[in-house]
Image 1: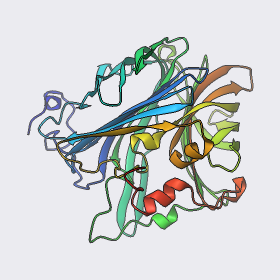
Image 2: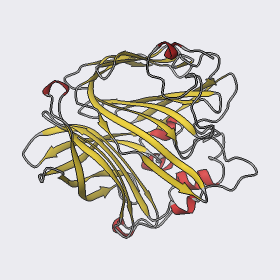
Image 3: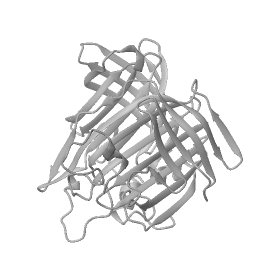
Image 4: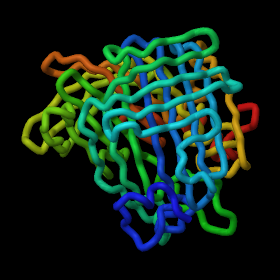
Length: 383
């Protein structure tokens, strides 16, 4: 089947673009974008997943206002025959100018969230090292990803409340990944599950922050014994400065969390760079986006890549005024942070911090609610 991409001179296999080379059902292409202000009034997350070997395209849009209420919309459709259109229901994504301008729209829907916004690329994209893992003889992750820092313009509306996005105070970050990844769809019947018992006693940390003259993109996996299993990241500079990214070679951290919770609220980091320099950062929470509302790690009866029929939509509102509710919907979170560097610069960005107990460094020994929900099938439909 030919698509519009087959008109471009970028083929890398003796086939067309309507399917990837591997036939693994976990093969995925994902897009993620987060937009937030500097005071905690707004954080918005939206994204798409394309699953050619499952014939599924899904997406989500979540808006947290004042850290009081998070409005969620999850969407899914069959991928074919519109395999070259990145849209699902009222949500659409368009690359206007690569690495410079991405337009994302959400039209009218039952959750009463709408927006028309543009991501404006500001920093050079940071390309992660390829991520590969095999378990019980089967590849469970073989992934490429880049992240980019920028600003946002446009508008967001929830009900009667409309927020105009100002590039001076509305920060944005996005990523694009492709390959085989974990947690796609429901477990395959009749096959042995990958060795997810390995996902204990570890911390995953993904950081994307931008300051006035530089930014950071960093992904780490650290075992409870302090062993670094994965470290890939860069310090990046503005697009027009023609300065190459500088690799991060080591890091130190001292994070803090809400009382009795695994939800992060701040901490310090020290980054060691390949050029011999180091950067110190202090981060403090402004607000949080709970990505379970978008289906990450599973919510209600939905997980990313799961076939839900020709067209499907669901959503709800999280009441975040109660810390117990925030703990219940905690899973993979975008914690919006203010960032202060050792040389006095101030910026903003996102930390995604997940801890798989036991992790003695931060005294986490109990399974969080999202793990309990996933173990029993993503929880009840009432969520």
